[in-house]
Image 1 (tube, rainbow, N blue to C red):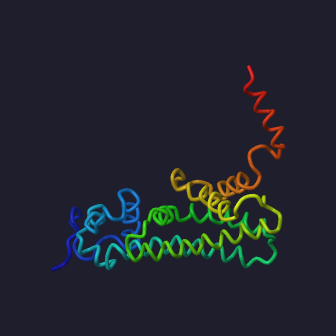
Image 2: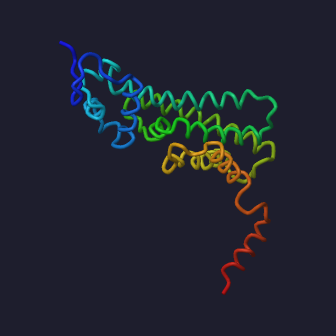
Image 3: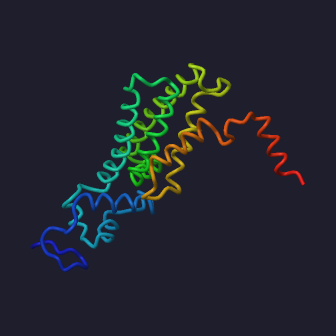
Length: 216
């Protein structure tokens, strides 16, 4: 018997493709958690039967795999491009890595959001976390190279700098919304991270200015 999509009155193949199923599933995973979301939830959101969902994908874990791979593949490719540019010094390479991380996050916001929320409860999540750790190590190496070149201050652990720097980038998922100007946002993050907020003023001068602004 031909499959009927619930609530649509349509017969035959469901009126959605795999991309629709993936998009809705990732949105649900982000809103209510992967563990708390079932294939039935995805089906109801699309107005389909569960068997119609299985027409497109083998199961929930496949949807998770596709999403985290999307985020990890995009970031890996972006870092490969930065690393392959022999014309960059250590500082510019790190700046470009930061900018690339921001633009990837904006372009793949739902997938990156999901990646940052996985906890390693399933084999797919464990594999994703392993790949993410490898990327973190690449970024830490870039920080270390910049520190060795004297670009960054040497009184802080490069790994700590890397975690703080890219922790700021990752925090964007909490408030960035689709449609934001990715290039402008990437520029703002890079300027804040490398140049600060004080227009290059000496720390003592900045403190004096702050004192003047608060004195009554």
